[in-house]
Each structure stands twice: as structure tokens, then as C-alpha cells.
Length: 141
Image 1 (spheres, one colour):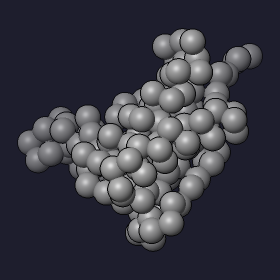
Image 2 (cartoon, one colour):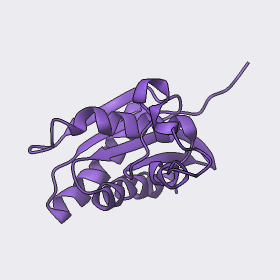
Image 3 (cartoon, helix red, strand yellow):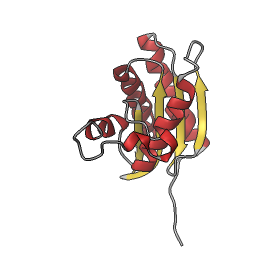
């Protein structure tokens, strides 16, 4: 029998609130998704002005980071032509995302979920996702 540690809805709201605060600070409305450790959606928010094309992208960034247990920007680096994971983004029906903005969420060193953010530049998406993870880390102490 496995004992699985995963995010709950209140944790997801903390992650979203932290990300939203950063998005408001930088003036970029975002789509923000939080998934459990298996990549299943827990919560989603599309801020007013968040791009419709970013809805599924945010969800898939969260899915990717939770499932692969790595940041999506790291996957982007190793999936370029000539690199060991080239072609990775075409797997799983195209759901694996290799663009910045998806981060695994950790608790006591274990991946308990993921956060995915989309609507800005890759650097902005990553910055907003990091703010969500920092907000969650603050409640873990």
C-alpha cells in the first residue's frame, strides 16, 4: 500500500494567490493551474485578461512539471535538436510542455503537485510560478 502526499484545495488556493499577486505586480494577467502529484487538475484561475490560448497551456505546464518532476524550462533545455530529450514535447499527445512556467511543488522533498502559468513571456510565466511556489513554501514552515 502506498501513502501518497498531495496538495489539497486549500494548498492550491495558496499557490494561485501567490502567483496572482506577482502577476498583478508585473501587470500581466495570467492563467494559473495547480495539479496534484499525478498531474490531475485541482484548481485553475484565469485572471481578467488572461489569454484564452493560455488556458490549456497553463494546465499542461502544471501536468508536465508534476508528472516529470522537473521544471518545464529545464525540459526545454534538454529537448532542443541534438540534445538527449529531443522530441519530448511531441509525446503524450503533445501535452508535455517544454516552455518556462511550469514548476513542481515540493513538501519535505517530495513532489506533491505542480503549478503552471501562462500568458506572459516565458520569463514572466516562470517568475509568476516561482511566486506561487514561494507562497506555498511559506505556509510549510
